[in-house]
Image 1 (cartoon, rainbow, N blue to C red):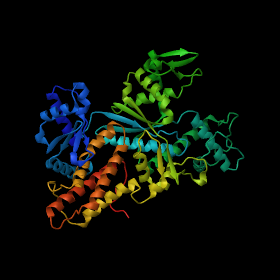
Image 2: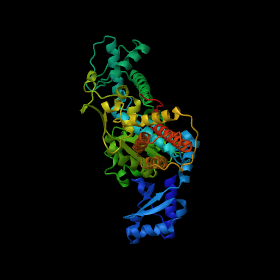
Image 3: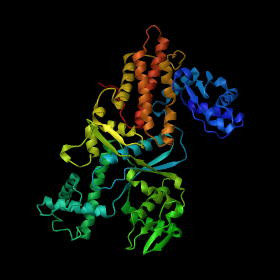
Image 4: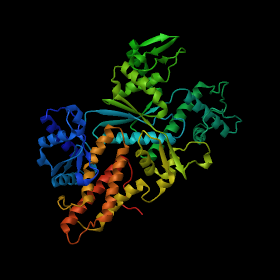
Length: 547
């Protein structure tokens, strides 16, 4: 990785100057006339060594092994610019060709991540908010794998508690209505179309077996055994639907862990024993002293009626995740409505003896679709959220993954339906996919030979393409380390833009110069490969033809 090579040489030069443990950042130059890559380390060190950036930069140059580069030059107020040798470019193109689909993957690291995402209650279809969570979590997990980590993905099934009792009640009412029983669905029940489908499936299997079951005055199923049967059936049915929804956007999660299983496995009692020294009893309830670990107030674990709060099985679940698969670190992808839950969960991990920094929580932002500058809604379902099924039908899975995967987690996501469906340069996904198709078209037009030399690739756009290819692995590292999957789409868009400009202005096949043509075809082949690899991280199709 060229950025690593430059960083290492800079660190060696700094050590000769008596400067150690300095973070050195290397990036592509904004203008190729200054060089290929640059660093501002002289400016960041200026105060530390009490010298001007220019003086520091000159001393760095004097201590650099300049023979490793074609040229190193100083640009005021203290930038160091590096122009690469042809050998660096040749090594890169050879590596891309040799590794093909594996180019961009890093060596294995002895660290295992457990990444939990989506984890929606199995009470209905996944909707628009879950899509952002699913795609962010999925691309992040993919990035971490490519960066060399062992990664396990996880879904927490909230199949215990009042919401599941309410689900069973809703299904029973619809089931009875199917058999012409005069019964109203309570106001706070689940009213989605999927509840009808669960009820129909229940009837197909059990026929009239539950026809005499009713709700009690608390609007609960009055038969405990039937309640459990319907709960189990409904959760299983809807969880299958959730898995289908996720598969429709190329998202496949390794493990689905049930809250009911956590509750029945004895793990909650084990956890309560582990954290006993940090608990106390007050007003008949058991409390965890989370304030001792940075929370703003202590939290109840067992209520005065003897039931667990939702916090307690969650602690047991996270303890379970840490205990399996040699897991080193946990990442939870949540919605922004759970921000207030972070401090207490980290405090609980501290109480269990874990490093709270090994639990990371990232929050997926709110997203919406717009059309003609207004929020897009389905007229047939006024007031209801768009589901993942709707989103795939409206804009397609590739567009959904692109527009969600290309958005920063720190900003609200707005997808313009007209742009997402357009087949022109206004659509960034189309622009990138068309770059791949265009490269494929160039390569299929002509019989060519590979030549990994780059001495004839002297055009500015050729150097820009080479430098962008050099920066692919660094982009993966930056995206993985900063938990910012959108860096991949930004990179791909920039690469596509450089390539489209190259195609429009440079004659790739020069019949009078076969040596130059061979080098250009090799460059185009490598651009196509890296575009495909980057799209693969996002699980988006790299088309060979587009119309």
